Length: 254
Image (cartoon, rainbow, N blue to C red; front, side, top):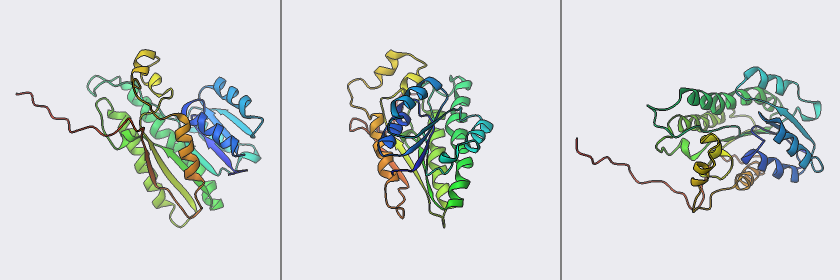
């Protein structure tokens, strides 16, 4: 991986920040993007001694901003070897008939459109060079439903299916596509989902040993470091303390 250029969205925390640290240790050149500039600046300061880093404050929901960010990359960062589509979020756990529609819009715009925009603007360069790897962070929620997962699970199912269809479109090239589906992981995810409510967020992980950002970063590292003829299509990762639930059956008499 030494000398490769890695473009990471949502790099300010969680899987993105952990992946940035891991790739920096591998000697990679990093393009780090996120909406929040202060965490990016801190990460740049932390890693600048081991890696060349270019940071971009970026909201992946903004198509023109994504286009501009890719087109204006400095020469040394233009040939992107790995795009890690990591930016994403869940908001709320209300049932569909009670949900805030703004939350649904935000999840669709971030988890679906953000992945579309970043992929569309980075992919032509990979195809032209006949080299590259797109790694999309989906979720077990995209395959296994749960109450309150409604649109979040739907957006992550899109990421999984989009990844598969990209593989079909790219047949005949050497551009690889991988979809990683993490389960329960202790990052800022639940804090964001519950809009800053620390008690609700910490309750999600109480009594468990959830995945950490570093676990998914290591998964990303393994996937992209496989020989160039090997494509890991889809990889589901859970904590040992998480599995699938039983059938839900309503036995109340009507």
